[in-house]
Length: 390
Ligand SMILES: Cc1ncc(COP(=O)(O)O)c(C=O)c1O
Image 1: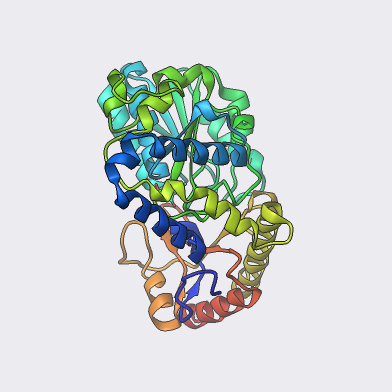
Image 2: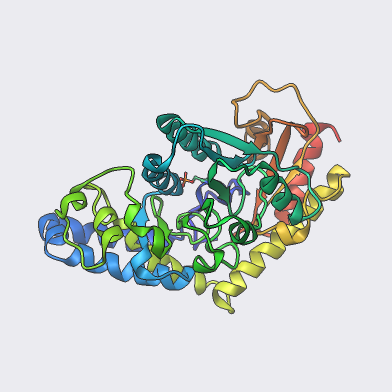
């Protein structure tokens, strides 16, 4: 537990929302910040920033199966999705469709709405069942919503509220190149076996601050070679007219500098990869399988306690899993159910409870990381029994 700074008085079952960063990585981040502050002008303008960024890019590219020319850093997956969608706006015509699913992360679905409206296009929504029995249910639901006006599919590799690993490679294989597939893989790297280039999508963005455990504000965008020259960040800076000289080609020139910011979160990624790898005798593959097994065990505990059936097959579960809860008249936000606050305040458990727009009305999502124990989920089941009167 001392490897992490998490409050020992709280049961943390929400790695999925914001990740958690090992203490060693935060120490590395502070050393980077101190190095920058010794001489910011020298750090940014005389090559050290670019050199460290390129080293970090090499490490991330290796970890996620990407080539370096196609990989750039953004502060979070939301920024990656926004950059791609804004870049696509000029190619959209009135009546064209951007397809999302009803499991799409709210912020990114909003980005699709805004880009579509700027271009006179529309957002259409595939209704993916939840609970579901087979990954085929997702493929069928998405393909049923594709029309001859569909230009872009925005799809999550792992969904947020419902915690499902979606068959994105299967969908890309059926839809590309007519429909450009933008994969929001916010949760994928570090959680599931994940190889960017093999997905077959045009664009993949993912967070490093969730399951790769870097400092917060670190994510990447990868673009397939044939799409690279048309992609720009949501914030245009010097690179647009060659003002940020780059040996790495168009994408690097556009994204490597988007204005002054603290790059230390990006530059901690190699430290995070090494720190988490060292936490398991089998390195990253061992980490991924340990946290998945823990999550599946936690899900089993909840399924039994709530007397329900699994909401999805085990092959659609990584290290987050959602269970439907009995309906309640809720007065919470559009996203979170008040039960989340009750579990925090009365039981010391941090776990998200999302409102869901169709039955089952609300879902509880557990996460598992190396700081979690099997007994954590028993404690959650007891707290749920107390709150739900089960
Ligand atoms: C599927 C999905 N996409 C995007 C995000 C947004 O991540 P960020 O806030 O780091 O941009 C999340 C966050 O949980 C997510 O679950």
